[in-house]
Length: 360
Image (cartoon, rainbow, N blue to C red; front, side, top):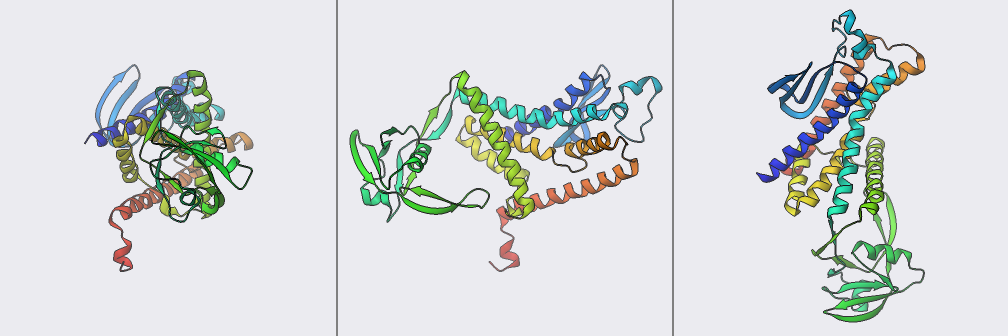
């Protein structure tokens, strides 16, 4: 129940921040905002302040900011036209569309900064398991040993081990371990293996043949260092998201990896059980994904609106209403198909539909 509550709060916050981006930029250009809603469908709770209605609606899978003049068949009084969305220059409409995804990415940046300062868990350098027939076993490394140094370089966390081995120039490395308080020096010859990265691309790396333990340590950054780290993490995870989408389109990554709300809830539940830090970190990743996906040039998404207005800037002609309506319909169908496929993948992970179709 607590995990579900975390999930709902996180989802509402992601939507709120996204829509607030649209809302704020529209306000900056003095465009009349008719409705600000969290969720779609029937309005469960509403109130009006000024000229804007604020609402919480029944279907929590998104939200919207309704602007005057956004609907093509909307009648606009002559005195309201300067404040109408449709009467704004295309660059203003682009800024409003970009603001939602941008605010999601900025939210992730802030979360990464916050987590970097309060502290985040990383695997310690303690060995959890030594694989059979590996350099580590041959050298005498045992479960419970703490990797203290590699070639004289201090090891602070488990991820430092891989980078230190990759940077080693010779065929062997000098490993200093802490075994129950006693320092032991060992010479290990790493072995090279081929693996696949998160995009399915093969690469080679050197290993000792050890696995991390369940032990974690908390890392904190100074406010100054946290700035650089948060920008790096936001850029890197944004890049990974974009590359992942491109590779799914290219067919390099199986579309089976696409997940929907059920998968997100399952992962959020796992993170919540590990602690608020893990959950907040996952929340930032989802915020980045939401921002990037909304920038895809699919009509009905923010990216589709950006595309239409960019075409108008280049051609200096408005796209006809009929073309826009057809494109919006096609975009909606594409979006619905992706959602259905995502839901199918979610439930396939739970129920394993393959066993019914293939006799597994």
